[in-house]
Length: 390
Ligand SMILES: Cc1ncc(COP(=O)(O)O)c(C=O)c1O
Image 1 (cartoon, rainbow, N blue to C red):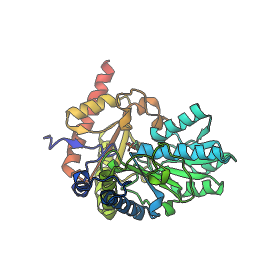
Image 2: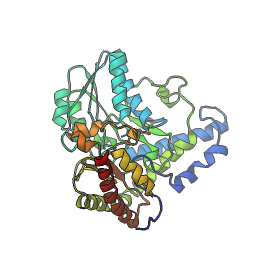
Image 3: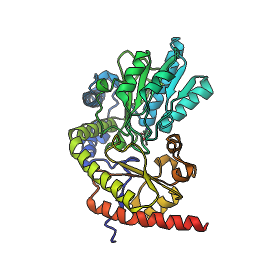
Image 4: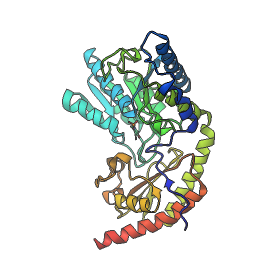
């Protein structure tokens, strides 16, 4: 079949910047270039842009503007939430223990690991079911008198499963424990009202919803104190030092606003293509399984495991055929270990090594999916034969 154009099916890794977002950002590079912390009019103009962006982000999240902290990315938002909460809890004698899950992004798991290794915090990880979902009762069972924080992601980056965050938050609060959610994959697709979710902290990253890379935000509920993970100047009410990245903050706000104004349209488009991929792959490829929850999954995520396939070889083959995809999470490319997320769901290593994540986007077309459904079954067959010969 004719390859229509290079086909990008890796929107969970990153998305292109929406032209309307780029346009909103442009004046803040060389026209309105003051430092928002400066007193003069150049500074004031930049400060106004930052504060307007904060209002707009807060509007989407249903919170107050001063509950939004701008950061450099989703990872930094997660770091600030975890390290800040745990250090403050220790200082105030409120706790020493963190509860999390085995399916978190490394921005959470490695931060938790560092808290345990370098600072002697206690960390518990609850189990997940075969769909990668957390049972809120497991969270309740893991909470101890010294638990300071529960951190559970809203939707998973590898297999798209959505967690019952409102129930998790409710149960954690019954134990007097704060709740953080990594909403980096959810933002742009799932409802983001922090009061409906009931969380105390929520992390987002603009490049997952058609904004620029290198800018994120953390919602911090009023009354929650976080010592900064990056210290220095008093920006962001002392929660995050460093001169504001004005253009990117404006870009994040514009991208988030657009994503939610147009969410119904985009989600319907994603679901259409996602479901074609799921049906097409499972019916055409023997020994294939969908990973993640059958319905409680991100609208744009179709992810699979194939028995006896080297996932990285499959990615390289697909790249040669003009299809950009991912095996597990983008950060894991080149790592021959099966994904810990898939193993924690009880998927056997023989299957987990052959994972493929396809994530559709606004520009995905039916012709793209036709082509992908033509090429992927043939690719899996070839890689299997090659593997058998080695
Ligand atoms: C669930 C999740 N959390 C955190 C991150 C890190 O975000 P960033 O790339 O903005 O640091 C990612 C990125 O892939 C992610 O998918």
